[in-house]
Image 1 (cartoon, helix red, strand yellow):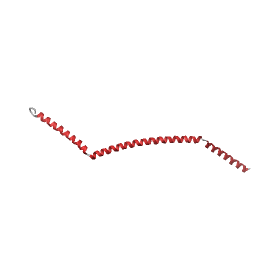
Image 2 (cartoon, rainbow, N blue to C red):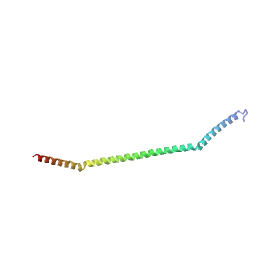
Image 3 (cartoon, one colour):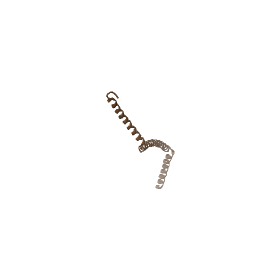
Image 4 (cartoon, one colour):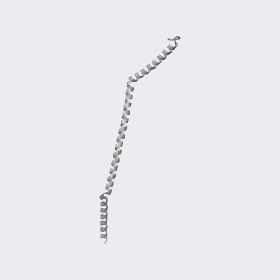
Length: 113
């Protein structure tokens, strides 16, 4: 102790106060580690977050593939439609219709005479 004794007592009281604060923090940490329910809840929340993120990534990947396949199918359909329109079948149908129309007109004219 010093001559009047006030310096050491104040320092001792300050040290006791700091020790109490440190002890309180240590007890809080130990209590948090011992709280199994809280740890399980936290672990479950983290697992949910990971699963949601993974599901979102998977959905984005699936949607991207579906859109890509839809574009490909649409392009193939347009290509096939163009091939059909340019093919000989429509012209043959038009020609057959014209011939049938001419035959019908000839038959009608022949009956009127």
